[in-house]
Length: 538
Image 1 (cartoon, helix red, strand yellow):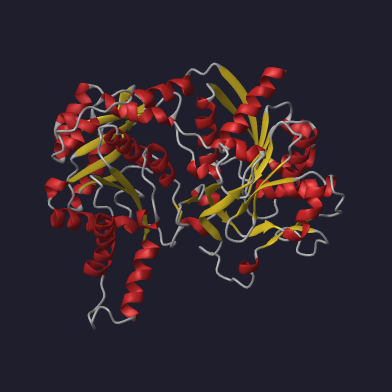
Image 2 (cartoon, rainbow, N blue to C red):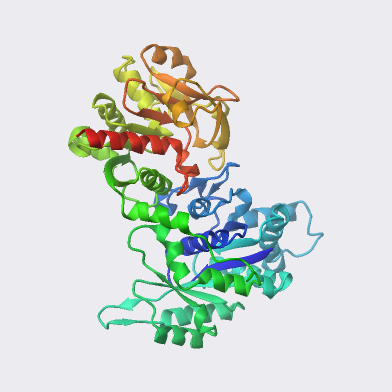
């Protein structure tokens, strides 16, 4: 196996994850098998207990691991299906070291940062290597910024690992900022020089430098960076701000032939140039669509770009599939409570209510679901959005006064949504929800079954504690609510729909975690198709 390590310098949010994912895309299009992983230096065991304000969305993998949102980019940009082995945090590292110490596995030795903590980090890479013998290249992104105290042990572990596997099998890529000082009218290379100098102090000489820049990289600056950072000039690569969509990133990095630089460095030069025609067609459909729809997303963290990242990307995938630009209107759920759904949402082609926790904004989301139902506007509820649709239907169609979820009102007389039985008594918050891929049965003759091409079983990823209360199932069905899917293991309701509505579907799972650029998730595809149909009828 060959190894690529992607580090970042100067500032955060440079796009290391997108750079790493784009390299994975290019290598896969050269016929290589890739696998990606993220090392996060924070002390949380995983991001599952973090607020979206701190960390953006939590991306859930098939095996139930709650991970960094960059793993979403990895799965969307490459074909790999990742597992909990592909996301490592300092919390996991220290937890493992302390448990080994308590079990006496260090045989009485003094436990130290070096070698014991760095050995733990390296052991993850060795284990992933053993578990994936058919993978050609393992790409690892290191979170944070070079020079951060919390990341020093990871950098040291990489230095040691490169010596163990042979430097000829390792490519270090450093992503830095190349700022344009508008007042001076100049691009400045000094931050890049300082960042690389810091990395070299820690024992790592980058093989390739990726310069994030809003301007282009001229030859003079390329030459200067190469000289001061001790790399070949051709190995200084520009990573420009893309104009329309993040899916342009692989095409932009391809301009400086970064995939060729990587395969040459790793001795994989026999691979053909990447065949990017399908990717380019997808990008063109995103940039130059024939149609347009407007979708309102009514959420609790709507001001945060990354809180619903996978949902926004899934809408882009579905839009491109239908040659349609999806214009997203972000609606604060609390504003609906104050001013009403019609005034805040207006005349849109579709309404989506995403997942979330806590009761803030829930009454606004219920009003949004009612507005969509009554006005025949396509509605798509995800996780909490499915529960919201159930509550709204119970209140306003079934006449169940005060119907609610016990998450929001523990004393409600009509708990149409309630805590899962196995969740009762659980005190720890981390990794204790219903998590990961579960098998569900699809019922024939439903809209959902039609969207899934009438397969019998589906596998979707979950992240929730509360469920549709089966005690109310018969009453809601008699009033017209259709249950189109239940879990194979215990019959929990997975999908609900209203058959007399143009599109009104709620899914208890998170379909956004399985959508890809050229393979949009069927529920998102159906939702955008319904929104497009509504736009044509106006």
